[in-house]
Image (cartoon, rainbow, N blue to C red):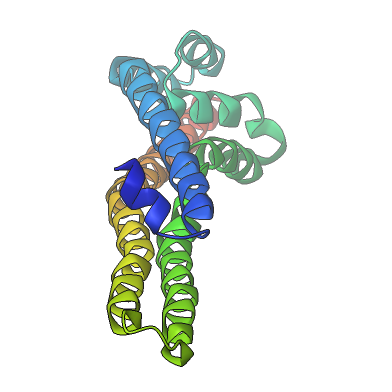
Length: 206
């Protein structure tokens, strides 16, 4: 493998750096995804809804404050600031949580595009060097040319491999981000309806 890597030319080093960045992002995001999965607490979200429906907003905030679920955190922040602006509070809390899910996705998106281009550039420079041997007078020049082209294609192969390996986690993380956005939007809309209903019941009792 090391011999093949060295035959790929100077562009193999930027490709190696690109692959290390991709692996770092993927492993960090896998750890983040697993941690968020184990922190999910649908029961806490249900208790927040139940308390809000009864108009016990302070109790609902306490329920959410004890949970590490990202949906519960958004709802708790919205309840804490509902007197000033519920919509702005939801927007701020949702953006803060979604930024955590979005971290690293843009890096993988760039790598999926950049790695094949790096490989292609390495192949082009390698072929330029190989065809430069056409002016040589040695009888072995044709063999050197074909060998040079074969070595130049190594860079493209590595670039495509990096892009393909990065594409799968990129799509998975993008899906996780979209799911988190939908869950937050659905929960926020439901909580807003419960708050309005509870407030109307309070006014009716008065």
